[in-house]
Image 1 (spheres, rainbow over the protein chains, first blue to last red):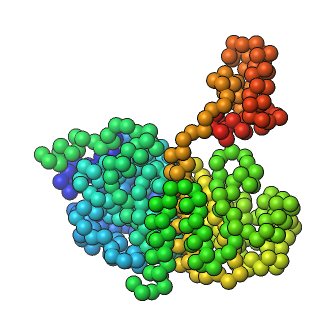
Image 2: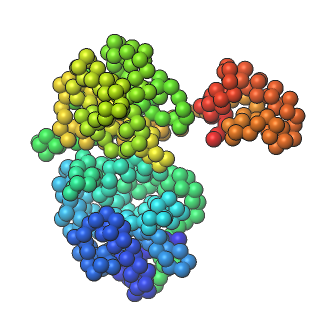
Image 3: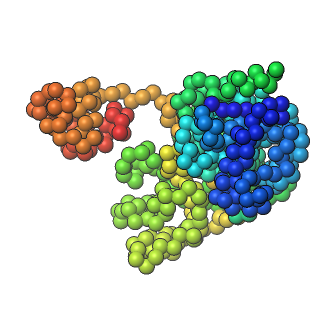
Length: 204
Length: 244
């Protein structure tokens, strides 16, 4: 199951969020060497981890975090407008129905697991539930064929470029019923992956 | 956006749009040819893996090579020793031919590179592998004498190749499945051959006589027009009659 954490329910999920920031440290600082994101040697956080952010987190029954990603409104200053405008050739999508997807992190042992597949399905499911047209994101170009293989419709927002020695491309993932059913089929997941208890808590 | 960068991105977007509209693999290959020509590449080799061991010619989606080079490549069995081929399969990153430096222990690989460069004037080459969910899927290898070898041009080619391969997979999945020519029993028996079982094993598993197993395999070989069990397995997999 994927837990959706946002400003409105954040206080219910202190432990889960702490584990999420620790996993991000493990993946982005220790493994990928993005040392400028170092906070305290345990957690990874940046200026976009604030009240406007939403987190989709894959955790098991014991609350161990397998992976997750962060969503941020494109109507506010976000990574594409502030850090990577050079990756976009043309207008940067800045609309209320487009969120920026960042910090997709998986625990090393979970990279081809059910949790990973659930997170991919959740991208589409959450997008449809929230009425989004899609997500902007910066990914490695090498992931593009893999995500296409899962059934994502991906529009490039610019050409791949090297950013500090790493190849990167800005893309737009379109949200649609068709894409959701393709991703479900490719990942063998029929049921909803979003934790509905959370959705209720949000409206309560 | 009147910069060079904008121009390359726009041409990539145009190609991606044309690929989306292509209804056949030939249509996708036309777009690839157009992109290659735009950047000055006149040698094109576009290979796809179908997941089975197959000959060089079976992997080729598109090949635009001058006749003498194509003949020499085939006759001398260059594919077996071509240093670009394993790199395309093993690593997903695009690379220039000049990045590939076979060491002295691979004299044939060196010779192939030299023949390509000196005898055929292939001064500059670029390879764009595409690795998907289950690893290597396809690779585009381009070469020419007077090409635009900027990183933007390389990025545009790399991007278009990814969309081309994805489209080819979608087109292939929409093709009507080839009509099976094997009987259910023949497919069943060949599956066990593929799994490495002997005729005796298979007879025990399927509770039929060993003689029946052998006759069934022979019948399948006849239908598939092959001469060995290994060929029969390969052909049956290729036709989608059995899975691995």
